[in-house]
Length: 163
Image (cartoon, rainbow, N blue to C red; front, side):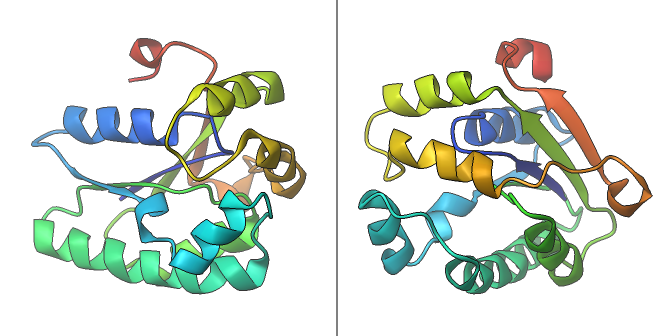
């Protein structure tokens, strides 16, 4: 299982879909945004950032969904696009997803690039006004032994340069 993570506008969905198509034999792609309860979507749509209390049940459901997809695929070939902004959120997935190998790809992107991308997309519930709160919540993976399963990539590069 590969979790593509980062703030809104970093390219989680685009990179995750591309990665799923490029992996040997193809992989199932899961967009965490599709699994938010209506209350979370309404909160974000109204410009309110989610709290830990909003996110934890959602992350636990994602763990179950990802595990089920991994088992059903018989190959653990699943790509999950999920913000995972804080270490505790990544730890929730680490402890909840049952699979052979779990890795995180952190799409690092400058704030101005994320703002521009979110402001230019149509039909998404996440307003550009919440990008600042995403950066305020973000705990950049340390890249040390504690989070050795995370690799960081420069998400300001074109998608063809990433995967």
